[in-house]
Image (tube, rainbow, N blue to C red):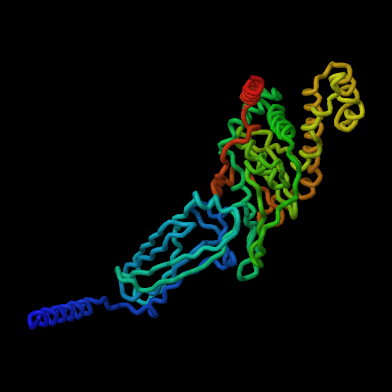
Amino acid sequence: MAGSKRIVIALLLIGTVLVCGCDKKKVVRTIDPSKVNFQVAYDVNFDGILYPSLIMGLANYNGKIESDFFSYSVTCPKNNSVLRIVMDSSVMNYVTIFQENMPKKDETYTFYPLVKWKYDNLIKLKQPGKVDFTFTCYINDEEVDVKNMRLNYRSINECVLGVRDTANKYIDYRWMFAAFVNEEHPWMDVMLNNILEQKVVQRFSGYQISEKEVQNQVFAIWYFIQTKGLKYSSISNTSKYSKKVNSQYIRFFDEVYRNKQANCIDACAFMASILKKIGLNPVIFVEPKHAYLGFYKDKQKKKIVLLETTLIGNVDLVSIDDKIDTATGLLPKAELNRYKKYLTEKEMDDYMQGNMNLEKLKQAISRANFNNAVKYNVDRYNKNKNNFAQPENQSYQKLDITSLRELVQPIQSRSGRMPLKMVSMSEERTATATDDYKNNR
């Protein structure tokens, strides 16, 4: 019994020694956090809101724009201190470590870190939400302070148009429209093949042949889009309001195609994506409350053609096939008259007499509509030409997509699988024949 007591007492003494030893090894701060005054700030111009489209659009840009996202402010506690700030992982970013030397004691330094964003996650953010960030400050490997920050974020579809800074100056950001022009979209090659199968043009030659052929290539794209039933939709509102930031909801390339809906800027970005892909130089003209497309007829960018993309939904080429009279194989006269303003008397007569097939009739209707769209903004452009030529006039912007690629890259949206109508016509016919065979077995 006495031996057991001696063992217990010995164990208690050892435990006491270990605890005391641990206390002696406790880390003691050598740097006063209040003197370091570590601060983390998010750009006040953005009203506490992160815009994934802005982050992704500027991902490859190394220059300086009007705003930075995050900033660190630290007062150096001793000469030649090494600062390290660790930004923890979140739904929007990976762990990001920033390190810099601070040579002078009592000097306050401000830094703008390059955040390691999770780009694959940013593109998935289709609805607004909140995100928490944690920042830990180390100086000479000693942990000095921790800061937490909660921000709102918006949908990847929300494009910043402009911000009002602390001096009440409006800063234009509509050059971000270029981020929604995506000439690298994975559906693009199949779409171009579909367009060529309609035989309006034999190939896409860019500026290699003639100015007339340039315009014909654009018409071939216009006609293809009309045969897919694209309609005008005015939806552009965002889900939440900001007092400082003006923004707009924009559909991505695949969203326009899938949903067959577009407002003026959606359609401009969609068309510009295809024009850029085939080697043409598109321009988006932005005015107060409206935007329209332009493209250069020549490689030297001397001659420009304007295109009112909202007119593309003015004619319905999709339902024509359903109106054919099975007895005659032709459109009834009353149905044909619906398109009278797009057809000459000769074209109508040629069709009724069998000298023009239905496909050529639809192309004639589409080309007349295209020619109207080309003329639509001429007077408007000439009236505002001087405004577009003045960089300081933020109400009128001429966005040359090719030039803007030095600043803004395309946002690679989550396109997913191509819808059936995106496959080539030959593949679609094969798929249909196969289905018919299976159904009739």
